[in-house]
Length: 88
Image (cartoon, rainbow, N blue to C red):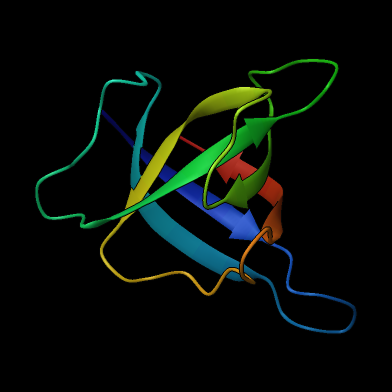
């Protein structure tokens, strides 16, 4: 697993949210010690390795899992948050 930082867009006129966590690109990974919350990262249509959104679950264009220490407020049930920038 790799350390990863995501900068999430929160809507017009609102400050971006900076998230720190762990990234893994193996679908078999279910947990990460010390990081109890797991989210899926969707890649772009042009390049699936370019993260474009953070979601509860992704089937198409899945890039990997992002684990966090704190929950992320993602709109339910089919919501997503845009990834504006990222770094490893």
